[in-house]
Image 1 (cartoon, helix red, strand yellow):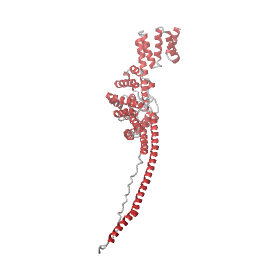
Image 2 (image 1 turned 180 degrees about the vertical axis):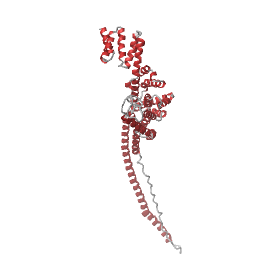
Image 3 (image 1 turned 60 degrees about the vertical axis):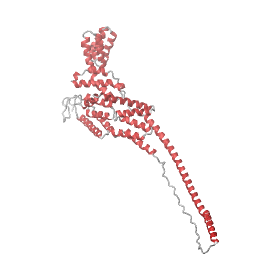
Image 4 (image 1 turned 180 degrees about the horizontal axis):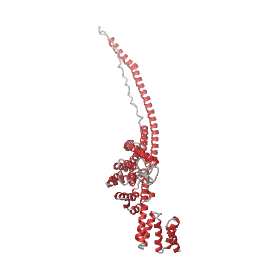
Length: 468
């Protein structure tokens, strides 16, 4: 273990630093708890619970920011869900804390050795931001086209899959929305946004289910029994005219029987059939009217859901990345890491790194990881750069009476470290030598006001007396 106070190595079984005497019991407990959170994050990542892993790994880093294993794993998870900038930021910070034997070197090398892949990831971020802007303006078709391209270039961009599914849900294409959400769920099984959208899709499909279908009813055909005509029997004894008369009368009676008995029965049957059909038609018409009313109500509900989804899209907040503001930060980080990798800290070109980092506008950095990286590099380089510039301005320029050049160099040293009292003093001396007494008095007074206990205070007081 490394003592957090003096930085010396401490044996594993010792609870007190032998060099500075600091009690390390609490520090050991904190480090053990940080490692515990790291192990939990590793277990969650193995089962693709990436959102849960991100939460516990951030807790691990809150307890021990130098836990490079947790930071490297967090960067890998960010890369897996498509957030490349956050991943690179974590790996760069990890490299700063552990310059040698760090897995972050391999991860960054795999990206930097493939410029085509880096350009593709950059394009996906730009296209995603453009699609988000189009969706907020109501251009759903254009946003969907751009998001399809984003997901084809980077199939693991979870936020792009979620936004594409949201647009499909708005347009009623639930099948396509489900496919996008299933892909996102396979990448991160516990993402609450994905699970919420899937839940909403389940409720929407239940309301659209077609309940208007009715079973077809078969019309029952009634079989009519054929009429039976009575047949008269006769015995042919001898020719008799009454036989023919009786035959004619029988036929007539049969016809009248059919007309008065069977025809009314058939007519009543048809009337009943028509009446039943009329009742069925009225019932069907009433049912259809109710179905139309129900569909109108469901349509109103769906319209309200569309409005709610549009409101979700309008309020869908996703970090929009502007890669240009990170260029100088990444350049400074690369210079710093390369110098650390090539040799000892004494070989680092602090001035070159500070000149690159000073171009970064920290108020424009949107990611907290990028701000932390900026502060780490600034703390590690600005003071050293100020010392190097002071040595150059004093030894090489001021001592050789190159006062104009010395002023430029010493002012830069003062800007990098406002506590460099020697730089402030010789800025005043350079102005003094150039007979610019107003500026000379300004810097002498800075020493008297801000550094009254320094060794330069008495010298500055004497030079002020000479001017006055």
